[in-house]
Image (cartoon, rainbow, N blue to C red):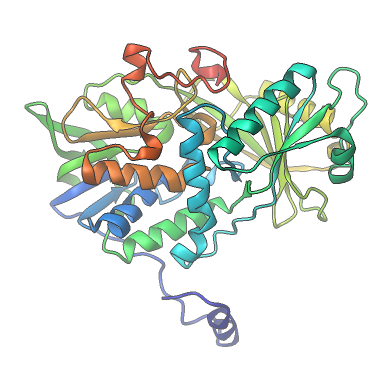
Amino acid sequence: MLFSGLRVLREGLTGNRGWQAHWRDASPKDAYDVVIIGGGGHGLSTAYYLAREHGITNVAVLEKGYLGGGNVGRNTTIVRANYFLPGNSEFYSHSLKLWEGLEQELNYNVMHSQRGQIVLFHSDGQRDAAIRRGNAMRNQGDDAELLSVARLKKVLPYLDYEQARFPIYGGLLQRRAGTARHDAVAWGYARGASERGVDLIQNCEVTGIDIEGGAVKGVQTSRGVIRAKKVAVIVAGRSSQVAAMAGMRLPIESHVLQAFVTEGLKPCIDHVVSFGMGHFYISQSDKGGLVFGGDLDMYASYAARGNLPLVEHVMEAGMTLMPMIGQAKVLRAWGGIMDMSPDGSPIIDKSPVEGLYLNCGWCYGGFKAVPGSGHCMAHLLATDRPHAAAARLRLDRFRTGRGLMDEEGTGAQHNLH
């Protein structure tokens, strides 16, 4: 079923009786060429690109709940490619290019809005760092513009520029950055994978990974044993738990990241805005709600909810940056379980177990990475070689110390990334 403006009009005039299910609700077969554990954005995009790019369709995506019920539906929807270090820079640049053609590729409206992101800086040192980052982004082939305070005041007149503690010195703008509808991204990839023959199996929890002679043979699930030649673990904050089923201890900690949305308001924020001194970021959704977030809850947890001190911290940062936000009523809050790596950068690699592959450690970068992650992971699964854009996202960097990508310069502490 193809989508078009004419189709929407026709269905609206005929009671919307002609729409079909977007994907098949499949039952598990006895065996597959590839089993993907995790039905979030990364798992679904991996399945889609396996079928689309490599012709591998004997694939099952196993989700213990419902598709898109994890982090892909629990985030602040930001899409950007403003990373600084080699390894991260080319990967997120690759992912942003895929975002820019995604709606045409999927024939699905993911509401990708390139409204631009502005990262503020508040000191001479932060200005220097922003200039370095902007130059690195431009050298990578991406866009970056340095904005003076005078230009910022025209674009973001509602900020508190004269505060004594964190005066605003300027900002770094990436015009191609923006937002997308998180649920629609999952639905679009699910639809695309299903129509190419991939089995999407919901309410199917993996309870064990079968390994014989150092090689994976399949998985144990709540719906029976499923054999597989290759198994991909793509479960975000649950990475450590699932990897433990294969006898592996990953360099991953799981932390909760909270997000918030206000009541619907008239349009007032045109961009994604990031506070350089308070780890606060905000945008406005198409429904009018202000969507914002901040720091991690600093204790390790698998709870999909946060703690009140971090709620207070985020609200304080918002009020410091833009006092007008104090007039808005918070409508709801939620928490996603983040898989935090020691250097703040992801892992797309083979595991020491033959036929077992890992995709984890996304920290704050998970949603914006969905197309690039799936594209690179599918390439790895199909060819057993890393994609050029993910060549540095290796697991063994934590064993050897070579190739670490400490994007924020905060050292090997998961919760500081």
